[in-house]
Length: 320
Image (tube, rainbow, N blue to C red; front, side, top):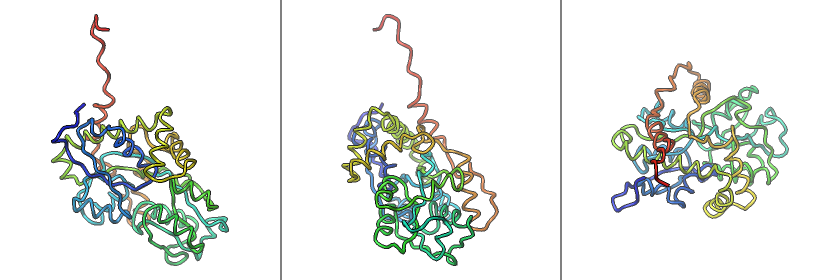
């Protein structure tokens, strides 16, 4: 692997400060990005709108956030972005105030979202729509930003009826007495949430850097998903996200949970991504004709997999 040296490639990456950012944070603390020649700077922004705008301006080169944001940038803003790897199905649950028992009880309430036009907000619209609740007629949408702000809004005002949350905020919500009405994938089917995406022109001009970044990220995943590293993962979450020990520990366990947590190869679930595209089409009232492959360039991921998952050479005869 390429070692760190003065002309290592500087890369700025944006992600939300959730438990799902653990692989990047672990990679920074363990030197895994440095070992691949990446001088990584990790930043967070208040909401997905700021993430999309910052990527378009070049404030950062890679964004880890729900894949639907890349779809929005391409289809609505006509920006040439491309998804280079997956991550997870969202680890999302629909949380409501304690007095709310059913989705139908959200009639007349407030839905708290990050941004009104992408990703988990669309999931919520679909879930409520399946119960004949129509946005702006049967409930009000309130935009507050990323997960920690949504949780705080639910905590401060009982009139804020519902929001989509994932770890660690979903765990904190339970401890606050908020009620989960279910995992969103159980309510609407498979969904491609976690992803990394880039501006296509930048990636094509920096192919080697992108491949090395993805390779390092895969190595970070291996480290995080190893049960033997659980205590070290908990320590990183406690220190960097200021989480209580119990929430940090449970978050780390959920990240390792097959079918719910992080995909061990950061792969794209094509069935989930098709559902992501179909969900956007349904909410926007347009035909579902999008080609999933047109939003993806997984050649970087494939090249990184060859680096990280390459078979080790057989030992030379006579060498101990």
